[in-house]
Image 1 (cartoon, rainbow, N blue to C red):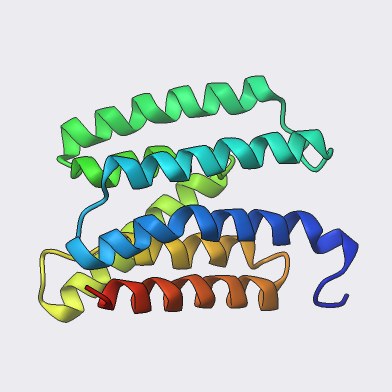
Image 2: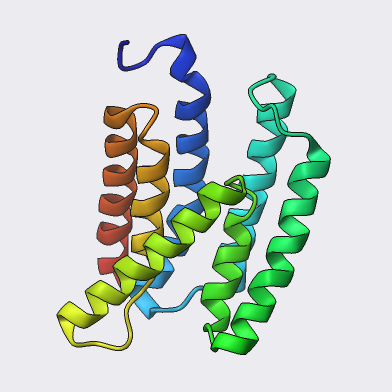
Length: 170
C-alpha cells in the first residue's frame, strides 16, 4: 500500500479538514490556556462539513440518525460530566465539538487517552494548568493513524508545529 493511494483519500481529506478546523483552537489554547467559543464553533463546523462530505461521496456507512443520536447523547453526557466531575467549561465544549469527528467508541478512547496524557504532562511539569488541545490533536491523529501511519504522523506533526509557531508570535 502506497502513501497516497485512492483508498487513502477519505482519510487524507478528513485529516486535512481536521487540521484546518483545529488549528485556531490549538493556537489560542497554547497562547492563553483556554478554549474559546469561536474556535470550538470552527471545529463543530468542520465536523459537520466532514460528515456532509463523507455522506455525499459515499465514504461513510453511518446513518445521519446514528450520528445525530450520538451527538445529542454525547452532549448530555458531557454536560453531566462537567457539572458532576467539575470539568472546565472550555474542555467540555471542545469535547462536544469533537463529537462530530468520531464514532462513539473511538471518541471514548480519544477522551480517555487525551485526559491521561494531559494529566501526565501536568504531573511531569508540576503544573495544574496544562492546555489539553495539544494532547487532543496528538490523540486524534494517532487514532486515525491506524489506517496510514505516515499520513497520520505527517498531519499531526504539521498541525502541532504550525500551532506552536503561530502561538509564539504575539
